[in-house]
Length: 206
Image (cartoon, rainbow, N blue to C red; front, side, top):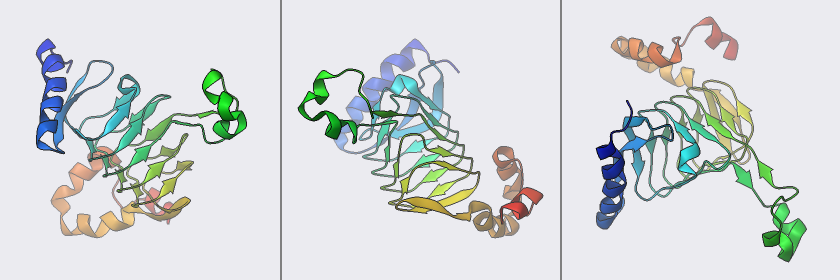
């Protein structure tokens, strides 16, 4: 649904007013293409660089005091949850600043200045204090443990942990006993995952 003129005017004002009462998660977000995401909730204390380049699905949650750098392209799939104090970055100057020294601010097109988009698949969970570096790609249904430093590509349903982070498990193993205990939830799971734990794909991942 495209955002109305009222929503375009009210949402930034609502976010600003909410800061008067401290950290709050504010419902509603207008994507760069003008789509109004009714169920996406973003903290008024999180900061997004280049929000017009943030491709985000609905039902996304972004917690307090996080920094999302969408400068070179950031995609966050439907239903993702991003914990407090999380950093997601699409560029890095840590080599360039040493190479150029005082000349760094004078050079527009810098060598060793890394730029790469970040992609987070639907229904991923990013734990508090995690950092995702430029070029990171997560498949659907991944879990990133708190305080992890993540770089590179990870398959669907990966459990990711460590500094540097690596794949340490499969979220379908976590999900299987809960779905067995609550079979009424299986249609909801299938809607986004396309399969239930115990499928051929799951067995191959083990």
